[in-house]
Image (cartoon, rainbow, N blue to C red; front, side, top):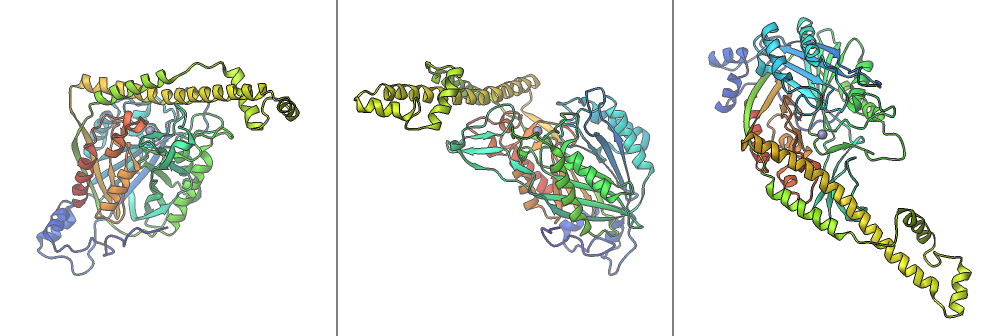
Amino acid sequence: MTTRRAPDGQLGLFPRCHADRETRDSCLRQGTAILILVLAGSCPSGRIEAAQLHAGVAKVDVTNRDAGPVNDPLFVKALVLTDGATTAVLVTVDAVAIAEIGSIRNEYLANVRLRLQQELGIEPSQLLVNASHCHGAVCAEIEDRTVQAVNTAWRAMVPVHVGAGVGREDRIMENRRLKLKNGREADVRHAYSLPPDEEVAGVGPVDPEIGILRLDTLDGNTLAVVYNFSCHPIQGVPSRGNTADISGFASQVIEENLGNGTVALFLQGCSGDINPVSYKDVDVPRNAEPLGNMLGLSTLRALRALQTRQDDRLAVVNRTLKLPTADFAQRIAALEAEKQRLVGSLRGTSLNLKAFIPLVVKYNLSDEFPSAHAHRYLHERMLERDALGKLDAENRENLRTYVQNILAMEEITRVQTNLALLRQHQADLADSGNRTIDVEVLAVRIGEFVLVTFPGELSVQIGLNIKQRAPHELTFVSGCTNGYIYYAPTAEQLRNPGAAQEDCDCILAPEWQSLFEDNVATLLKTL
Ligand SMILES: [Zn+2]
């Protein structure tokens, strides 16, 4: 386990005294126990019996078994926490998103909230639902099973001790945005070809941190592990069956190793531009299981070094932010012009694919004598004839043209795919008539574990920025939470003069990033 900064919170049973007004004000918002102390006019000089945090956890299978073969099950998992005054409900779903894309309908979150309010009295604002963003298929009863999981967790609540920490995993992911020498950015997708190697100048960052929350029963058994990590869980499995992918395997490793019914809840982090490694491998079947095993084992390693203690701090702050939406008209026009330029660059050659491939082999096998055995070339030179040389020059020119055509075709696949995304979002934005979008942002504290959420696919740099500015040692960030508004790239990524998925499958204007990060910085001070 690694530690970023000195642990937050000094007193074993109660948050530390706060001398300054701003921090004391934030204390006031935390809960009844602190309120009573501040009103009493002094900070506690010694240890005071704190409110006891209670937690319950449950998981329910949500695999769609009508959608073809199943490789491994998908789950909805619920963790309910209360200190008597505040209740927080954390739900994780093995799904691509909880709205807009995939099979979970847009009404899901509102319906679940309504039912939990009616059945258990849980305030809608206290519910957090994170999608792992795996691309598995969930069953049609996802709403009922989510409510069932929360109900079961609610009824199973017991007193708990809390611990938080950081693990490290840097072997299973890579940034998927490629910085090109021409100043553009491309990305690593199955939807199209990679740019040529000689055009690639650099790659983006990754976040190797695993943010961990551990909840133990008072007799020392681990009730639940919440872990946050940034990577698209989209590697797939050799069987091509339905799968919860990397995070599903990681959770399985954690749960099986800890035993005693421990539930591991994966919180997707800022994976907008983070792929699994070897994502485009064509030589061996792509397999999420070893990657998930590594993530699970790294989480377990950190868990072993992590202590739990009594800590009753529990807070959920729910805010709605108004973010500016994009106008892609200029980008669409520029990319259409680029597509026309590429189409116009295609040139006729004598070759077709059947003629091209054997020529490539021959001209790479022998640079000096590609078209015939060496003695034929030597014989021609002796007679001062150059028929083979002239043939080679013509073939080489045709090969160069054909390769240029292929590279232009590959570029067209990238431009065309991303242009379609831009056109779709531009049409939707025009239909909505709004220049802003309301998004729900949560800031949650559970003991020393602090979490910020966002309903889109955040680029990893945004998570790194938030952690860097955070006033709390163990702050983590989850995208794909409480909604889905597509990709949420950095302002710099949105200004990409090329076309990559994150800056085209998006509805936000570049100004959104600083607005969000500034609001989060303010929000975190209230915890
Ligand atoms: Zn994605």
